[in-house]
Amino acid sequence: MVGNISIQHVRKEFVNQDSTQENIVALNDFTIDIQPGEFVSLIGPSGCGKSTLLRLIGGLEHPNSGSIVLDGKEIKKPGSDRGFAFQGSNLFPWLTVEQNISFGLKARHIYKDHKKDVQDFINLIGLNGFEKSYPHQLSGGMNQRASLARALVGHPKVLLLDEPLGALDAFTRMNLQDEILKIWQQHGMTMIMVTHDVDEAIYMSDKVVVMSARPSKVEAVIDIDLPRPRARAQDTFQVYRSKILDILNLGGDIATIDYQI
Image 1 (tube, rainbow, N blue to C red):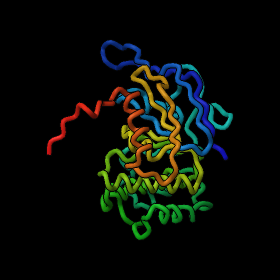
Image 2 (cartoon, rainbow, N blue to C red):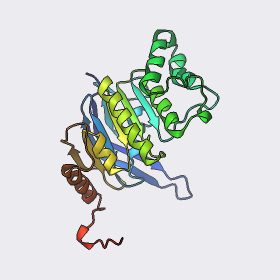
Image 3 (cartoon, helix red, strand yellow):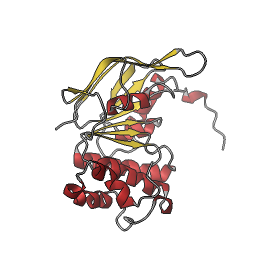
Image 4 (cartoon, one colour):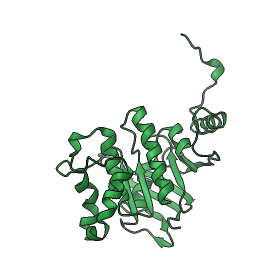
């Protein structure tokens, strides 16, 4: 099993581009270890550095200090061992589903060796029959499926998910949560997902990392000890939900709520 990530004492600063040119500290002394094959969700206030952390793991940004190590090697740049799926599909509108999914393989000149994988992933995500369709001919959920397949087809060690389901309606979102879990269970890769949805984090994750407001650090790491598939209505699920909301200072006293029908 591969996909072990060690994040040690990471600090990341940005320069504010307004007239002040002040330094903004996004992450400060951020430390966490992620085990091979774990599904980890990052949750925290808006602007706390969740997406920045993903970009650092992806090699798209570099820390000012500290280290991020994948399977014993420090991450210095992007690599095919890490796949990215963003909020919104980000598909090329002029390419078909099949062409979008195979784009990275062709760019790496390995398409001939992995041509079968393209169709396998199209079948896996339920888009067989839509191979020749363009993004504008598909629903939002179908486009997001194609985006996931494009990130997965190169068989990365780590899949980085930046709110991949945030723009979808509730029913499509829940269906795709199950699709992502099925892919994760079949392929055994490490998955790290940014989400603002506490229920989504509990439903999908082995571990939920709660991040503080900027400059962000690890506020809490919560191991989700629930059998799969998980039932959102079960009592233990709600206990985890209340715990995370309390850490985020979003919990409320149910006795004070006045329900009106």
